[in-house]
Length: 246
Image 1 (tube, rainbow, N blue to C red):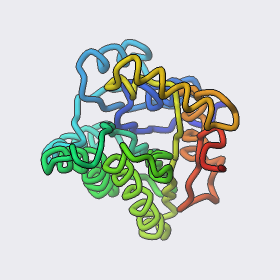
Image 2 (tube, one colour):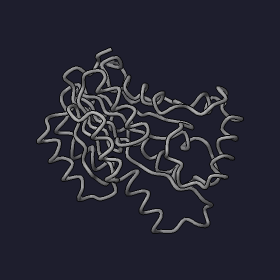
Image 3 (tube, rainbow, N blue to C red):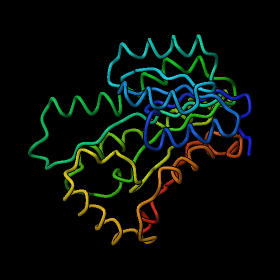
Image 4 (tube, one colour):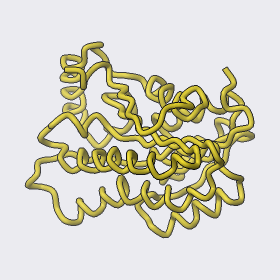
């Protein structure tokens, strides 16, 4: 397929995991990508994968000042056909351990960041562009240790529905990707024994009885970013092996 010939797509948090898997496919389908990330090493590695078809920018979604830098970079690069608001992070723990500082930090990265980014970048979207927002199945799972993370991802779902209505007149579509247990380095904050226990619990809970691959989640995001989904907006697509079906 060559759905992205001549298309420019910005992927925040695109230097690893699902975002990077999506970037690989966009480039393979003849598109160009602008990726953001916070880690210099991840940024350098991503830039080496497809140097002629990408730009990589160190940019922290949690930093309000970084939104101006991102908009300037996009203005210099050219208007966007696709915007994938994918940057975010997770920390888990009991309610009693959540502090005002940890609350503000995660809300800044996972909620305020995408909101400010879309607000600033919206004039740089081509008519008919597609916006994809990465949420998480955690928003629906009622897991006791993920209340703050789940709240941030639930907020994204609510905001995206409003954004879909706001941009519909311009033919700009906004949809939500809802990944479930996907095999990325996103859970590196867990100790190895906790991670193994988590993986085991996932296999028991997911009807397809396995963890998903980053490429599988990225494939759905690319459907939403492409003209294949030209009559889809304001929707959510779960990529979770059937987890939320139960």
